Length: 53
Image (cartoon, helix red, strand yellow):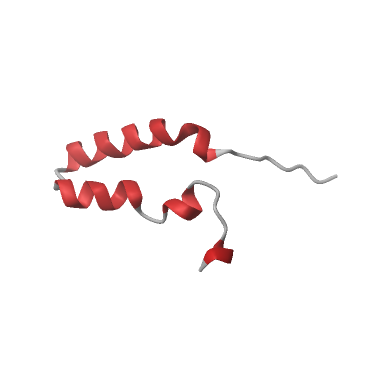
């Protein structure tokens, strides 16, 4: 029997962004570094595919 879990991260993006912002504040990242973290590989983090490359 194979079990599969499916996650729709795009529905939780605002929560993930808040976590990223708080962690960035705690470790003292600059605005530019924080922006990079929040937007890093967003296509893949939010369920995109690589067909558009």
